[in-house]
Image 1 (cartoon, rainbow, N blue to C red):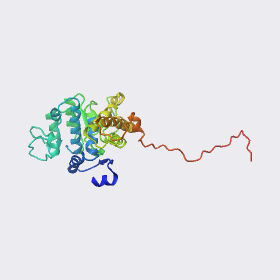
Image 2 (cartoon, rainbow, N blue to C red; image 1 turned 90 degrees about the vertical axis):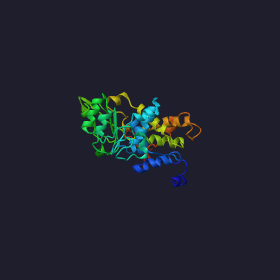
Image 3 (cartoon, helix red, strand yellow; image 1 turned 135 degrees about the vertical axis):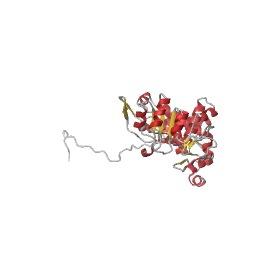
Length: 319
């Protein structure tokens, strides 16, 4: 990290991508307060999910708890509502199977050990299940049907990708819940028609988040990316979902709108950064959206080929 800053300067934005679980949280905690950096797998994925307990899942849990606190729920109450499962079962204190590393301890419950996700769902009766641990078919038919028994609109987020690693497919989720679930996936799935209605699965991809975050950081010279920025990005993203999107079964705007989504997120983060003193680009722009748009890369070029015209047949030519 020191070498990067020495080579490219203090304004360098550093994005961590695809770090192994044992390094991802350790490096994030070590460097987040001293460098302008973020881990997209942890924080970007979490922002998308907030609109197994691997790195993405822990990040999701942290941001969801932060979102609940922002709505007035106490920190303790927010944490108590989040139950997590890893490869050894439910995260509980003094688990005989062990495997409770530092970043998981916060979400451990005073509860008897439960070994499988299916048993956890039956016992806890959650309103939402979120998978981002790359365990294919983890959301079985029994689990999804149980979710439909407990909830009128169960939330099923199968965020692992590629498609071969998805916890379940869109078609499975819709069929097993009779079209009642709120579904999102990390991989793209085709529209599903059920009960005469066509539903378009939302793709919960962190590509919705990191371009806008980077655009805000670069344009406004933000020195530090704190966790509330990712909550602000998540809230901005959710605010861009239209009623038409919801009627189609989407919980995110279409990915084809990603350019405009990024501008709106960057503008929101710029307003937040200037209000908290995190931005260093001065004078502070009065119209922050216009300021942000001036940083966009445009792919339209003027033609350098000389313009030519044909001589009108109705006009005589002189030689």
